[in-house]
Amino acid sequence: LNRCFRAPFEGVDGAIAEAALDCLFDLEPEAVLDVHNNTGRNPAYGIVHQLDDMHLGLVAHFSHTAVLSDLFMGTFVEPFLGRAPAAIIECGKAHTAEADAIAEAGIRRFLRADHIEPVLVMDPPMRVLANAMRVELAEGKTLAFGAGPTDASLTLDAELDQLNFQLVRAGTRIGWTRCETLPFRVVGPDGTNRAQSYFERVGDEVRTVRTFVPTMITLSVAAALSDCLFYAADQR
Image 1 (tube, one colour):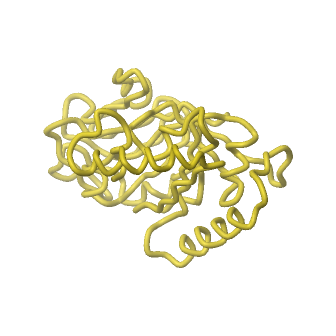
Image 2 (tube, one colour):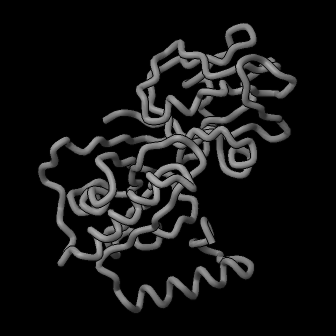
C-alpha cells in the first residue's frame, strides 16, 4: 500500500488505503508513525512534512536526524498533515539486527510515552536536512554498479552508499555514463528537472557541481529502478 494514500485511490490497493484512512480519521489519532527500513547503508532517520517541536519529538524516539520533505508521493503520513503530528521513520538497512533493534526501542519509547513530547533541547542536537530532491534514472536508460564504466547508461560507484548522510562537496565523482547528456533527472516538488544544478558530465565521469547530502542511496538495481537512485538534500 505504500504511496497509495492519495486520491483518486485507484484499484484494490487504493480502495484499501482509502478505507483505512476513513477508519483512522474517525479515531482521531494523537500522532502517526510509519516505520520502515530500506536497502542501503543508512543511519536511522525520520522524514517530516512540517518542521516543529512536535514532529521532531516523534523522530527523536528513533533518531537525531530528520529530513524535512516537500515531496508528496502518496505516503501513509501525508493525509494526516494538519490533523496530527506524523513522521516516516527509516530504521536502517533491512534484515539487519541493528535496524530491528532501533525499530523496537523506538516503538517501545513511543508507546510508553504519556503524550507527545516536543523537542526543545537535545544532546546531541537534532540534525535537520531540507529541500530533498529525488534523483531518478531517465526513462529507457540502464543502470549498473561498479568500480568503473560498464555497458550501462549509468554506472554508479559500487561504494556510493558509504556517502549516505555525508556532506558531499562539489567535484565528487559518483559514477560514469556512456550518454552525451546526464541519464537521470533531479526532481523537486514542482516536477522540474534540476540535474544540471547538481551534476555534470566530465569526460565519461559524473561529478557533483554543488554541495549536498545524499540520502537513501541503494546498491540494488531493482530498488533503484522501482523507486529512485537516491535523494539529494541540503544541510540546514
